[in-house]
Image (cartoon, rainbow over all chains, first blue to last red; front, side):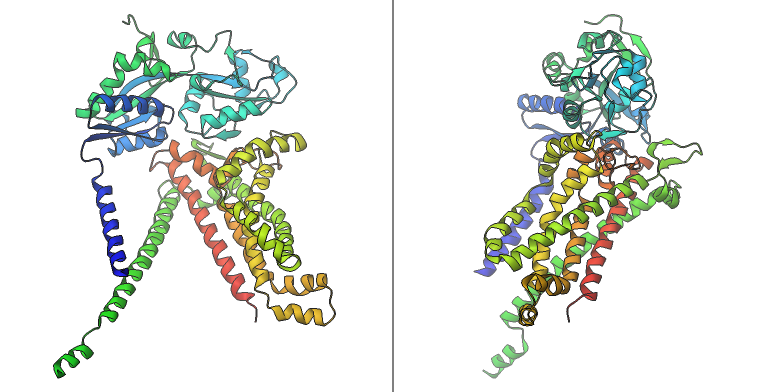
Length: 289
Length: 307
């Protein structure tokens, strides 16, 4: 009897190992890895895609922009998701990668309700994040110390914010959090806190700041009046082929760009009236649609 | 007939074969575990050392530097990878939480073994075991929503910092330290207590002068175990400590630990780059420290073994 159990156990183990190796072979599948900011979009698109194209799967994993870019450079996955241009990341050979901009994300400064400020000049914002202004009363708010909350160094949101809102200045070294959700919660709970999140994460218990009178809205992003925004990239190694190409075309199609993209709080690339390159240079898109 | 007896005597019996089979099976399991441990050690060590061999960072500036900004460069062109703020933060929360937790643990353990064993077994033991089983993210969440605001209101600052981390870790290591202290007190031979009481010592004198004294090595092991857990805890600490790679000036200003910087940086760095390598070096420190804690418990156990 014991013997039987042993052999059954071994048999099970072998079976499990085998299936683990061959899993997913019964259909075509690709893997997209990287940015957690882009993950919901790729997941939703992948699900829709799998529903209409039976037997084809898109595996989506997070891990961060750095992971996405290094995995795609090594050719370990089919698609590398990133919030930043490959050119901006050290140690990545950007020339080997092909960029597919699938969406745009606007980023807004958020503050704790009750700091007494709803509009701020870009100059003051810079002074706050570089640590030169440390009390809200200096920028027209209440007498309350400013608590600057950053995303982790190397996070896509942070590099976008530093590049566009702080004009490349490095933020003061202060508290860091590695997820947008944590940032949102802490800013909502901590008096005097300021940080920044993507538009889609703004909730009622947060106060967004308009900069020089410009409100953080999708329309202002499309015209670059609101300058703090970035592309969401899907990188492929070399020109995409087969299922990878098909899937990226699907994500870029009107079907996805006009439904899933705005539903999830992203801004469609087709709506953008300006274009930005890896070095922050802007060009006007003459005519869309 | 004779040949069959001979055969039976010289050939392996079924039982012996079964034993060989069992032995080799358990040996394979052990060998596999050892292999996994060795390869992890090798992997972390080789990656962690790359910071010093490939990127040319000196060990002194890594362990002693206070400027942490791996993506930037200092005035002398060297990358800013001083890990001292994190090392200090890790040790501070570890020691502080152990200092706070130890008296509580000993008190609870004495109550449960000496004063009221019945109630201890029935009520307190399950409670403590329950505490061990709570996932660290739950502790972190409670820390974020209860401890941090409390620290902010009582001690000022933003609430995030070493103090909040200490409080959360205190609750996390308390059950570990308590249950191990209970074990230590239980191994004190009954005749020690009987002899002490027979000499006319009161219960308190017996507990204080005999039971606790002879259980010191066990209690120390318990504390070191608790410290090892505190040192390696990542999630709960990360949620309440604020994660600022700055030398902690006081207990209520945001600080960081090795683990919190590690978990925050992992996804944002590129394999093989300096930013990634220094994270492996931090991991190496963690690994070495857990080895140190392990060796310490062994030494304490050997030196202080009751004779």
